[in-house]
Image (cartoon, rainbow, N blue to C red):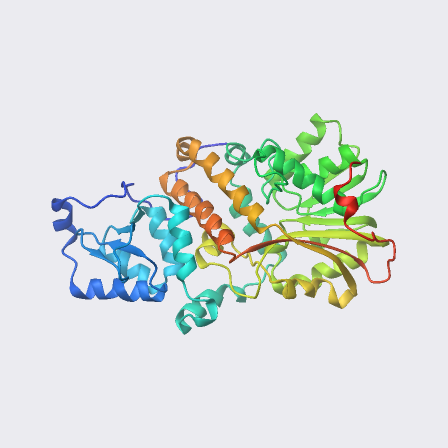
Length: 428
C-alpha cells in the first residue's frame, strides 16, 4: 500500500499534544478564558447530562458541573475548539480529538462510556441537535453512492486492515462462547455459528451479500461443501478474497463477484449477509427484501447479522460522516421491513452485543500496537480518528446504545425447520 500524504478522512491536522495543561507562555498566546467561555462549558456539560468530568481550558482553568470534583479530564486547546464543540458536539468532539485540539486524560473508552451513560436520550435532546442528527437520512444509498461509501472505508487498503484484524481478516463481531478465547478463535467460532444456524448441507448453493475479505464464503465452501456466490462492491476486498480462494484451491466452489446486492441473480438454498445491512439504508430495505424473495428457493433459509438499536435513532454524526458514510443501524422493527412485504417468517433472533464490546477491545488493543506503522501509512490525525472510532464503539456497545443482532428467517410456508436450538450446540 502506498503511503498517503494526507488521511482519507479529510480531518484537519494539528500537532499532537500529550493530555496535560498548557504552559504559562502558551496560555498567554491563546488568551485567558473569560466568564463567557466558562459559561459555554457549563452549558455544554448540561447538554451532556452533567457527566462527572472536568473540562480544562487552554489557560489551565478547570470547569465542571458536579458536586464533587471528577477524576476524568478533557483538555480544550484553544477557544475556537470550544466554539466548534458547542455548535455540534456529536460531530465536533471526534473532529477536534482527531486534530489534537481536544485531548483526553486516561482511558478514552472509559471516558466515552461515562459521557454516554449521562447524555440525554435522543428524543429528549434539543431540537437543533435532533435536526443536525437527522440531516443525513435525506441521502439515498443509490448504487453509485453505495460504491463511494464503501470506498471511503473499506478500500483504504488491505495492508492497513492486515495490521490489526485477525488472521482471516474478519471485520465483524466475533463470537466468544468462552471469554478467554483469542480473537482468532472467536472469529472462527462466529463463522461456525453462522453456518450452523443456516443448517448448511453439502452441494447446497449459498449467496452472500457483502462478503468482506471472503472468510465466511471460504469457510462455508471448505467445511460444509457448499457452492457460494459472494457479492461485494469493495474492489480491494474482492481482489484479496479471489487470491485467497486460489491459494486454498477453492475457486471452483466460491465465486467472488464485484457487484452490489441489487445485482444478485440465481436460485439459492441459503442467503446470508454479515455486516452489510447497516450500509443499505432504510429506504432500500424493501428492495433488498425483493432480492431475497426472487433468489431464495421454496425451502431456503437466510441469516442477517447486523448492528442495530432497541429503537429508531440516527447514527452518531461523526461516525456517519468520517467513518461509515451512509450507514444506519436499524431497530428490529425497522429491519422487519425486509420481511413483511414478502411474508418471510423470522425463526430466531440472537443479540451478541457484549461479544461486540469484546471484539472491539481486541481490535483497539491490536491497533495501538501498530499505531506507528499506521501513522507512516497515513498521518497522526488518521490514527487519532480510528482510535476515537474504536474506543467510542466499545463504549456504545457497553452501554447498550447499539446492539448486534443475528436474525434467521425462511419463507412463511416452509415447514422444514428445527424443533429446537439443540442442533446449534451438538457435535457435527
